[in-house]
Image (cartoon, rainbow, N blue to C red):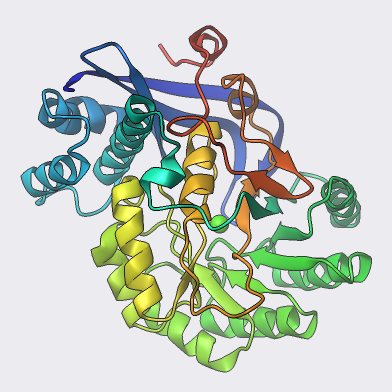
Length: 378
Ligand code: CA
């Protein structure tokens, strides 16, 4: 069964309410979807994380010509063919995001052609429901007292919906961050809390913030320092008990090898739509586990990327495992995204804070092209 065609769909939606994190305020959201069609007309869907237009150019000019004509089931052969042919330019960046999206679509196709859900192709799910944490709590352009109230209200909605774990954004400024860390813990004494700085701090600042997170019983501290500052990551980790997480901007087993070898992380967060796809994600997870590092994917796109992450995470091996063991919670993005909410009529069900692992063939979510049309960038 050969790959006949690969099409790309860059999506863009303006936000009703712009929201910010430690680096900027978003006015719009972008996604890039990839549709791979095989010779009998069956289609598989994938997604690329990061800027949509460079990834689209990479799919169309560097990846698709090498994939069309291959057997759909040859995902390893295809991955290494694209990798080797583009090695001088594709070790990091949009080209690897492009391969990621095509790889996810191929796995969706393998599932649809065999009638098997993705988690079965990956070797079997250890659970029917993946525990999730709600990502949201972004900054708004309002006075800081009001912002804390807005974030606490938002967190209360997730808690009411059954989420037992929440992730806040920090990295606005040190004084605000310390107030927010304390306020969220004060309102939710029993929830699992995490904080994501999106590399906002130098080592000294991260140490101070990390001690506050520790004092208030936060579970992990995500992207405390710059992604290239591996020595700072390792030093910070040696000073703190709170788990250090990161890796959403890293790609391939070779990139993650540097991260885990340097002692930077307790928890690695590859994004399947960026790190090299499902094929590379399984290798990154095996590599990380061999260093004692646990993995929970970063997921910040449409239902396509989320479904891939849910299947993948459901197949995580115990690391190291115990009688009463739980998966690390998986990211479940709740920030505004009309494309995410509208283009897939059948979504991954999230109930009581857990994602029900789809049992339909492939990813188990399908794109409605009519619903998608209003978001496609011409
Ligand atoms: Ca993050």
